[in-house]
Amino acid sequence: MSTAAAKKTLSNDAYDVEAIRADFPAMSLQVNGKPLVFLDSGASAQKPSVVLERMDRMYRSEYANVHRGAYRLSELATENYENARKTVAQFMNASVDEIVFTRSVTAAINLVAHSFGRAFLKAGDEVVISHMEHHANIVPWQLLRDIMGIVIKVAPIDDDGNFLIDEFKKLLGPKTKLVAITHCSNVLGTITPIKEITRIAHEAGAKVLIDGAQGIVHLGVDVRDVDCDFYGFTGHKLYGPTGIGVLYGKRDLLNALPPYEGGGDMIELVTFEKTTYREAPARFEAGTPPIVEAVGLAAAIDYVNSVGLDRIAKHETGLRDYAMKRLGEIDGLTIIGRPREKGPIVSFTLEGAHPHDIATIIDSKGVAVRAGHHCAQPLMERCNVAATARASFAMYNRIEDVDALVDALNTVKDIFG
Amino acid sequence: MDDDIRELYQEVILDHGKNPRNFRHPDDANHEAHGNNPLCGDRLTVYVRLGSDSRIEDAAFEGRGCAISVASASMMTDIVLGKTVTEVEALFDDFHKMCKGEDEGVALKGPEEDLDKLRVLAGVRQFPMRVKCATLAWHTLNEAVHGGDKTSTE
Image 1 (tube, rainbow over the protein chains, first blue to last red):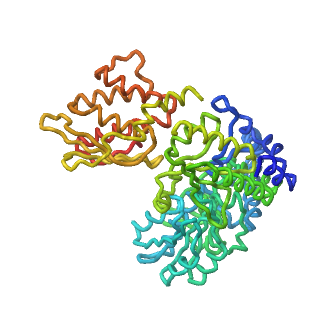
Image 2 (image 1 turned 180 degrees about the vertical axis):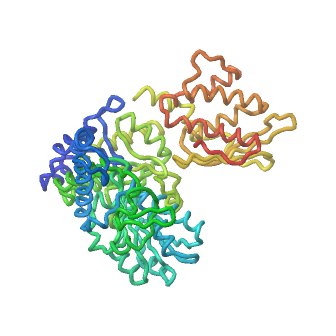
Image 3 (image 1 turned 90 degrees about the vertical axis):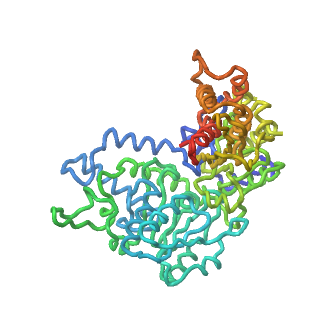
């Protein structure tokens, strides 16, 4: 496919990428004297002006602490914060009282590990994860294992990176209490069948936690349809600010869990002898929450909705396909991960050049990619690579970005021969 | 091509990166240490045979990493041969300053001939994220000769 043909394919639904780019200040940056070609949104996405402006406005004229003051400014801040919860709930098709604001998806998973783990797991109980989890969905379970003696089982993938549902099924048994699986691999791009996984896990009597860090950005989620018990995601990959994450949990389940952190805002009544806790989500939001970050996240979701998640996904898929094709034409380049269902994430290695060297060299051409183990060392071992370079595509990327990546990779080849 | 990139990836570095010297596991090594850069997953093991006079009689390494870290390990194992632990420490100190760009107007302690060889790696000073690639092998060697067995650049 030529650049022009690829552009034409993408323009079929009149997706105006230039107009979108104009909404993102970072898209007009120059890096190392070259226009920035940002292909690392999988690590963290750039922010549209509406998010920056919304947060700025709130800090300037609508800011006070929430849930406390009996004065107008605090009421206004509380209203904004709780409206942000509504926006998130609608985005996921959840109820507002099922949305817990956290610091990150990592914090969301740790919350489940501690609260759900302490309340419902005992020594010998099993938690099933997959071979392509991010460290954030591995290490919390290992910490719990060290404290409680739970057992971690790992669902395998095939060489293309497909999740093996039949193998997964075999791992489940009477001791399986939780299945914690990624929605979309941050390395291979593999989209997992979360609805089917949830159904199978529920049949085995296990609860389900989905790590949506990558998945929600490209696919969205309808938690009622999927029927998962928990779903975590982070704001900064969804064009929102850092420091804000979300844990969705089914209402009854959340209210059956003990608090994770103790502090202000999560209590009903405190005496030195005994303290009672509020219902979810307040129970899990001890202390002053990331107020403005939550409002910024809501602004990001509004922005994504205004463009349309489906249209964004279609655009990103087009970029991924074009990238897979162009990169595939480079001699010595190996794409890591060719699953049937794949998000806009393309990891690769280049013969004779370490990913770190690739990233440094193409950065001099203004092209930003991630290089390393992507916080997924067990997956790197599975793929027999020490590290990969990774290009990830977002709503503001364009066909020319792929061309710039390919040109820059040819420079790497020139250097390394 | 960009000047900083050209300076970083000089021929001699590319050559050491592709054909590392002393890339082996000597049976008679009496000190070794593992180095690990958790940020990028680079791992290497440095093996040393230390004589009774604290002189390095053999130095070698194995592992995987980027061109900069492999080239640095390769050059290091050549340069430290025959030197005492004290001399190696002085050289590491010099090298560290070079990589951080802190050697301007500072009197370096190591032999000029060795410093000249190491200077080809000083291009990393333009790339702060890559400094630890260049120094990983040296940190690991330092750990090895002092009896430790684990090094992390974090």
